[in-house]
Image 1 (cartoon, rainbow, N blue to C red):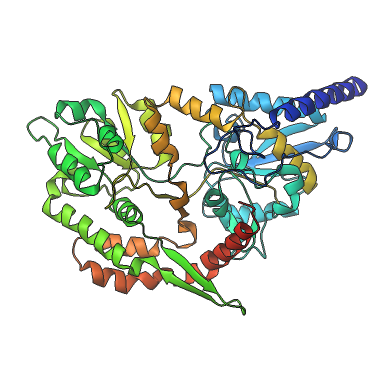
Image 2: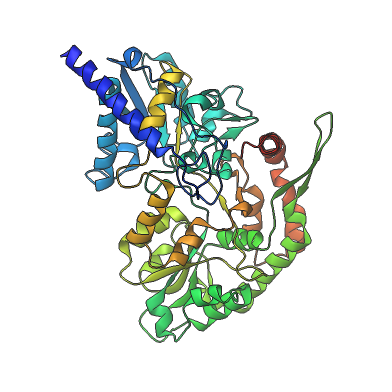
Length: 495
């Protein structure tokens, strides 16, 4: 049986190597080094050549994948779903390729995750990969600067996993979500359905209700380059009806999300690195103190206070993620929500036609956004062999059946969830150069939260002046070292 299994492994190795060589052959109209046409650009500029797989060494070994879902829900996909079946099939293919076994270990995903994860280092064969479809807790395992990280830096395995490949592992802002100093500790499995990194937040609108109010489809404003914040709030205030059993409001949104969306849509950046001196001193600017931030938030406050009744019964939902509930019930025409809620709730539960449109800023059609987290895969420090884990990582997270490239993933989203090509442009954010990472697990939202709590009752100028410094520690400990390293990698042509 062992001989037969090894022969099968060798045969599969040859077949997979041939398929990978074909997949990595660049088309003339595609960026070299990428298997598709991800608009964020390519990576190293060279076609990735995978080293020989250590099939003989890995044969007969047991490998464990740590996740925070039950074993019957592989990589977070719902039990017995089509995606779960594809994930299990991929695991089986990799097992056959290496002659090994793959299994899951479940670790509770709460504030004790980092401590529990660290304890695994004292157990035998406790994990070779770790996967999370929300990396907020996973980030805690890398510490402030990564010196005590329980995850291995991934650049040392670039020769295996092709780290800078944006199509397979997400763009640079997505990579920043698991970065400390000059090192990266996890990447996003971007070719897997629902795990392509998507920016926060999207405005989704009910086309049926919009038509009932006699409104123009919102994407027409975008196509005509007239989608500004004045137009957005005019639509919100025009779509209000209190004559029925349930009031229909213009917008369902959380206060903090509206503030951040307005801030970013005005072109503001929470942190701007101005210069780095020879001794390493960094000069940076706090974007919350900019005139653009004051103007954008003053505009939003004026809209909310003078047109209070059009927004969620005059209040924002107390639960930051509940905005989709009245939207799905037909009680609001627009909803400002995160991509996770859009894909896991709205596209599944909506019994009406819907579309996407950016949160508008002062300039027509300006698109911005940010990341709070992404799905992530990493290699623990206690893995049996880091290089073996890297090979498993590369082969497991090739695109699933039917979605081998970025273009395939985009086509899947378009055909399965959305109605127009413009939906996809907005969902994927054609202005990705403006995307940022919020650092909220480290306290990056402290200023935002303080401003949100008193937004309607205090002076905007006073709010900004008194609260902007709440994130100084986060900036100095996390953001500045990362931004300096990112600039270095950019100068080297890594991205």
